[in-house]
Image 1: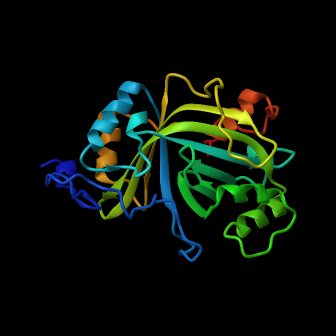
Image 2: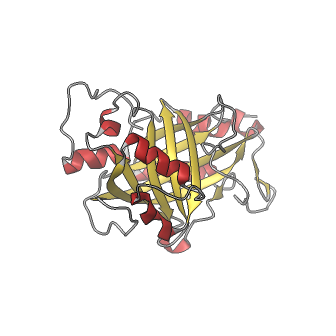
Image 3: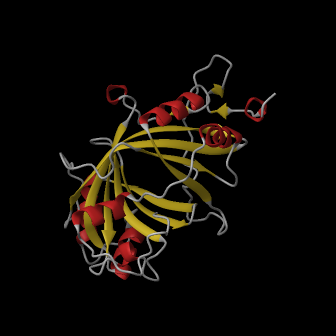
Amino acid sequence: MSELSDSAWIVAGGHAGNGQAPSAVGLESPSLYSPGAAEGATAFEVKFLLTEEQAAEVADRVSGKLALDPYADPALGNAYLTTSVYTDTPAFDVFYRTEGYDRDKFRVRRYGHSGPVFVERKTKNGEKVRKHRARVHPTEVADLAKSALNGEWAGEWFHSQLLEKRLKPVCRVAYERVAYLGTADGGTVRLTFDRNIRGALATEWGLSEVGAAPPLLTDRVVCEFKFRTAMPALFRGIVADLALTPAPFSKYRSFVRAAGLAPVRPTEGEGRADA
């Protein structure tokens, strides 16, 4: 038997191949960690820029093995809208990867047109990723503009980091995401496809819709394989069979470049992987 067929693909709600539809209920993205998680704990996110034909083949390869994300909307082809507010300093230290700003991104994210809202810190070192987030009420997002809070809010840690690092809203970026989630080789895995990525300038805290805007990426789908410890056999097989090559792409950095917000510096480093 092949390496793929030898692997056990277990998804919440049933095993692949037993006639039960897989479910992602109770599972979270591999990169999400609670504040008490071990310091060395980490996850991996490997990006690929695919054609629509390649994306369809990858989706077909995981069909029946991974489940559609609970946010999937059949009316949108099982995609869901994701909107994020990205932050940076007035000197664009995050964009330029200034020391102290080169690994973390702080953003506010909403799922769907009126779905849940999270404040989130994403720490990335190469393909290693660690995320910490807290759910907040949509009306509380405006409180991030305040100079002080009462200390009892779920997003207090996020607000404190904004003040310490002098971070302000720069842009809203929206896209349609199709996501699959499940467990493979004993660990949680996630597969995402992002399309129609577009952005708008943002100077205030808010998650209004981006609306019509030029796409930041054309003729390609941003695909990410997300897993802990080691890439599972299913993903390794897809990469090998389709001869896929990882490719960097940052939604935030792409918008900043497209909008001409920060001039290119010789030290920025074209060869460095985008986060």
